[in-house]
Amino acid sequence: MKRVFVIGVSLVLIVGVALLAMALAQSTTIVATQGTPRIDGVPGDHEWGMPVSVSLSLPVMAGGGPENATLRAAYDDEFIYLSVMWQDPTATQNIRKNTWTYDDATDSWARSGDEDRVYLLWNINAPDFESGCAAYCHVGAPAWDAVDTKMGTNNPGDMLDVWHWKAARTNPVGYADDKHWVDLTNADNSETRLGDSGSGFYSSNKSGDLPQYMDLHTAEFASPFLFDNALADFDSTMNWSDGSTIPGYFLKQPSGSRADVFAEGRYHDGIWVVEFKRRLDTGNPDDAVFAAGQAYLFSLGISDSSGQNKNGVPVLNLRLSSR
Image 1 (cartoon, one colour):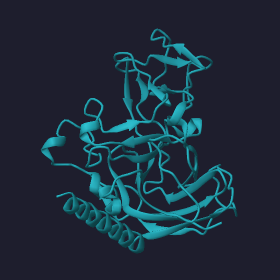
Image 2 (image 1 turned 60 degrees about the vertical axis):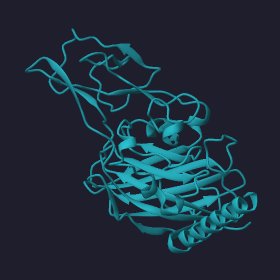
Image 3 (image 1 turned 30 degrees about the vertical axis):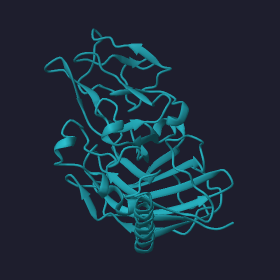
Image 4 (image 1 turned 45 degrees about the vertical axis):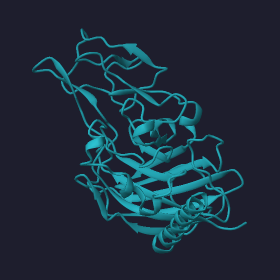
């Protein structure tokens, strides 16, 4: 029986390696060349590798993201760098998620708006990543009914690394949200998309049906962003003018593994450029590891003013050139 078991395990490993090799061969490859580009959301830095155009042909939910994106990559002794550039399909810079707006006619405040986003999904130890993100969508599966997003890994102990850039909630402080996905048996309160250890980037600016805070320095707040070092308690008795706005979140500096992914996104007349920077090996178990001369499958999704609807590509291949 032991010999049969060993043969069975070996066969599974052989099949898994073959599927991975096939996925690498069939997917679009972005080559990370040696260089140290500046992470500023400005295109044109010669430290990046060659640009590669990819088609975002997979609509998720209602779709609505861009149809194409251009990717570039680089790495040095410490960091991996990735640039994602796309033309916004609605030519709008969506950076006002859940913004409060005052209506003078009803003397009330209401929240509206969303944000543009980028999702990067990396494998840590899942053996079924050859089909990318499509393997981890469980819409319609009864066992996942209690999970809000229906996204997670398939086997106990499997984990995926997620970099989630948010135009309103992480970009203003210079990061992408570093998260990870797990399976149902390792879910936290039926949530399979978990933040890495440490503190996050934002908190909801809401107290009942009103904002909780306003800007310490400017009552008639025009900026879409509110930071935790400039908060004043919201004063509903002020003489607010019709259309006054207050941000839906207050932002703060993250900490721990949650703060592993630096990111800077800039909007250039209808075109977003979002650049990422992360250590090759953070030393954290909830992060993927990168090394020179190796190739890594990943998935990409881009949303236009939505948290669920997006366009994506299930599998891409990032290859770090040899030193």
